[in-house]
Length: 55
Image 1 (cartoon, rainbow, N blue to C red):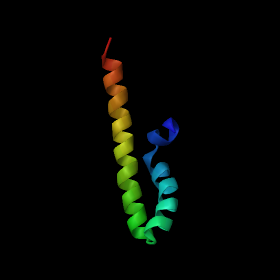
Image 2 (cartoon, rainbow, N blue to C red; image 1 turned 180 degrees about the horizontal axis):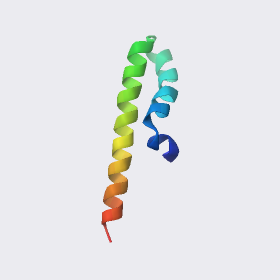
Image 3 (cartoon, helix red, strand yellow; image 1 turned 180 degrees about the vertical axis):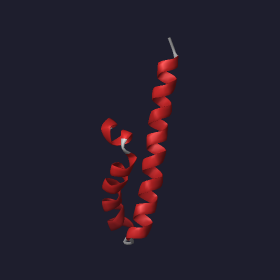
């Protein structure tokens, strides 16, 4: 999972397939997948940055 969070575009592609079934529209699914993937990637990076700053 950590490897996928470092590459949000691949995570979005993998996430778009189940969302395509849920939303029944690939345009909406890829848009939501991109938003969720980049948000998860930013949160993971922020977590790593704050963890490294603490001694």
